Length: 238
Ligand code: ADP
Ligand code: MG
Image 1: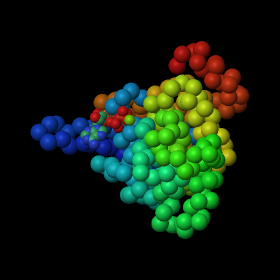
Image 2: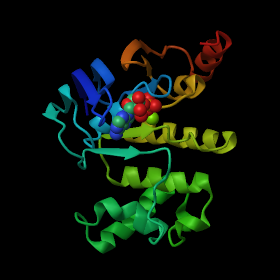
Image 3: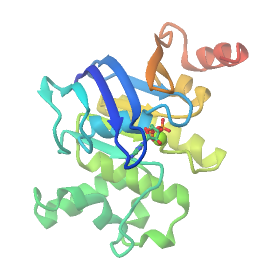
Image 4: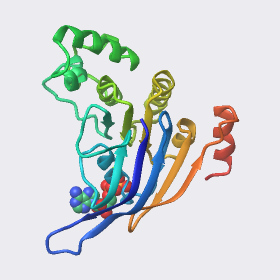
């Protein structure tokens, strides 16, 4: 699904203080099937931008469109993974995964769907477990499976591996890359790691703060094999 962000600004009004401009004149078009990484220092507005795309917040001015429809609220056409898995502790893993489907799918079909999505994140054995019985990395995989279960064309990931150790991060990077290749979803991926961005995405967008603006937007060279591209750019220490 193509995403069009047109001249978006966002202010936060805080009582007794000057209002804060989190984003200024953001223009951005993302094509269907692109895997875009969004980088920039803390506070530059990455999460604010993503939450508006998710329909969780509204811009102060400008417009955001998904498949030419104005984004006004959350919906099944977009799903989001946050830095923390935010699972329901009282629900089993499979109930967590199919929670977004509870109104649209009968129980039996939800069982099948849970199995399908847990398999994609290599958690087939853990459907009946509860979140506290899983490691942090496994919980984050459940959150990814839940986002996939919505089967939306647009997957938003806000520093999804930020809280994980290096090894788990690598495993999940590979899973996300595979999911992207298998499903052709449009992915917007916020990360602090340029290495992660280079490894995973087609295109990198860099923002700066005060107020949040886009300062760089470039395609990662697709003509070179992934690993080679990764290494070459890392040596330059971008
Ligand atoms: P990032 O995700 O890039 O670290 P955020 O989008 O979280 O940045 O925040 C951008 C700016 O907006 C920061 O200065 C932050 O303090 C401010 N901000 C974010 N959300 C709110 C909010 N709900 N109320 C007030 N200020 C906010
Ligand atoms: Mg953030």
